[in-house]
Length: 264
Ligand code: MG
Ligand code: MG
Image 1 (cartoon, rainbow, N blue to C red):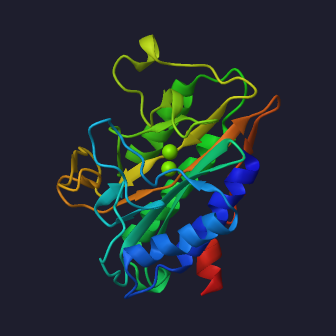
Image 2: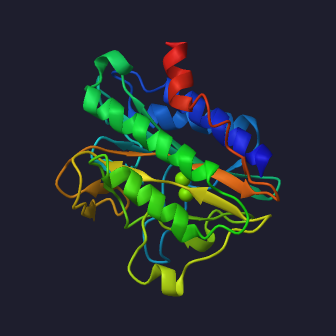
């Protein structure tokens, strides 16, 4: 899974560097797809179906811009300075999966509204804190509560309609790992972290606080903030170890966003 995670990281790095003004979201996806193919990994989002009747996803990555939270479909849309682009990628390599996402500002920090940049930095910090609090014996609800409180206390909304998940042989496995303590979660769905568990952790923040409502566009995939506010999404695949945690799509620092900013 660590090997798969490093392919995902390389693909996301290429895609993040392709997020320049004027580039299409299809070209961002193509950058990642090239890396996945070079490693002979399987792009897990390509032809993925959410439901047996739903449309199959047409690309190797989800590229979600501004008010698009997740599952954005790459296409002809041209990126503009200051937009937030979240890229999400999952691959299988030699039978094992990894899943990670990064959000980058088009044109770099100088072209980005400070409030948007602060949201990105805060999302990365929350993900980092969640990962650092992972250890055997901890209940997921403790981590979800920290994520929720950490977002809302700073005035951000947190998306609860979509969430983290177990991962291993398949991209999406039990259990579900929400970013907030949903009603009934503690009573029915909470779980205790054990060595050997592998999870994808993926907070999604919305600028301007609660309430956050989401809506799916007519393409059957793209999930947007219903009232059009910008969002960001960051994700890592991690393994619980006997002593703590290992970030399989890491390292945590520098984040891919920071790496790409340094490269400009
Ligand atoms: Mg993902
Ligand atoms: Mg995921």
